Image 1 (cartoon, rainbow, N blue to C red):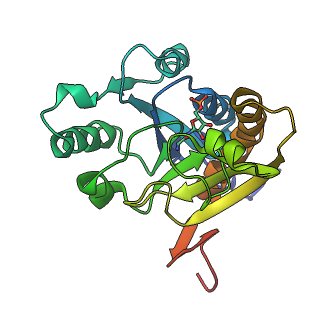
Image 2 (image 1 turned 180 degrees about the vertical axis):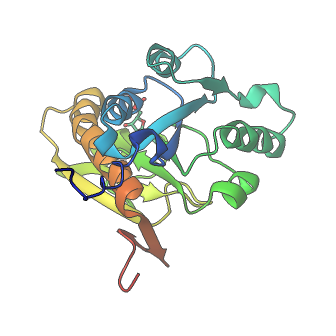
Length: 223
Ligand code: GAR
């Protein structure tokens, strides 16, 4: 007897499921990039690093990207006559990879109006201090010099300010009496890598909603 039941629809082709595309901006060692590259190998993560863009050549982060088979671009400020031209070139270099989300992971330059016009609201940054305290290039040093007993890291939405955008997530790290900038930063970075990977994955899978200064993972109420 032959069965009259029809075969069900084929299982969804994994290759056809759109993956959330990440471009990571870097300026240095790239340990946060490394953590994202470790995470993206798992299809369940829901996001994939499709390009890495640096503001300087010869950095370890670029080696990490190449080792992972991820294409890279370098857009160095010194190669352009002014910041606005550099910002346009950076915007183009990132745009080549058609990102859904841009992740500034140790990127030590401020992006400008052209960049934010195209990628604003979907660019996030990680910072090694509990914002709004201690923004800028020396967050760990400044927190230590101030004498705080608790510091940590923040993942924020990038706006035109210096580490000033809406805060998506934060985690604390206690400061030890004998901490140096290096020891504290290393402990913060352990927490920071986990937080960044978690937040970026959730943005890919659940979305990010921003209302005024309130940033929330997920589509937000009623959506
Ligand atoms: C990270 O701690 C990141 O928060 C910091 O640079 C480090 C980069 O480490 N960024 C800033 O201070 C931005 N204001 P990594 O290159 O090993 O990922």
